[in-house]
Amino acid sequence: AQTVTQSQPEMSVQEAETVTLSCTYDTSESDYYLFWYKQPPSRQMILVIRQEAYKQQNATENRFSVNFQKAAKSFSLKISDSQLGDAAMYFCAYRKDGTSYGKLTFGQGTILTVHP
Amino acid sequence: GAVVSQHPSRVICKSGTSVKIECRSLDFQATTMFWYRQFPKKSLMLMATSNEGSKATYEQGVEKDKFLINHASLTLSTLTVTSAHPEDSSFYICSVGQASGEQYFGPGTRLTVT
Image (cartoon, rainbow over the protein chains, first blue to last red):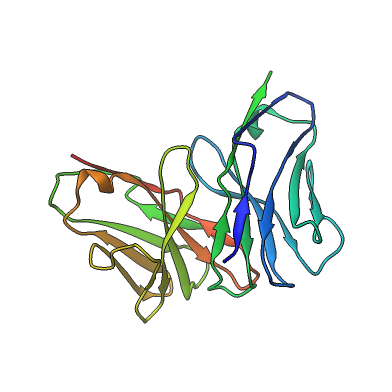
């Protein structure tokens, strides 16, 4: 079974600084999808970024980027120029296939605090 | 991405009663929806996969007779918590699966059983 591990229960960062959230996963599949979701205090889950395993290029969405290391099964999220609105719980997630019925496996989550 | 709504956003019910939570896909025809349960500051736990026009697929350990799921149309799935007890109090979230691989989530429903 696939597992996703986020080893940092909590992280903090100063506003405008950069922070990296770690995620490792275990799978025997060669093709899969990885995601980072953000859950702010409102508890609405928001997709931050996605990465297809067959793509070597790391995904980037504005201030959010990932460092995808397929051989190491590592998928970290870097947030640049942190803003107060980035404060949230972040979940790393794995999905085996790209169909609509593929299940997501979530990590334990990392609570990110942003200090002004 | 897909826009997903849930109703109600919060509900309080008495022990022994049943409560229904609706999940609607507002701009996307969803053949598959997912139901999750989340405890405070914890991860999402998948309860079941809801398939339009067929029976839901429940995860191991989830009581299908207690958590009834109906996915009667491409835009609506419902979760009914039957004979609710205080231990069923939780945050319930639904999501819509898209062929591109993402899931888009509803805003969640906070259930409190007194």
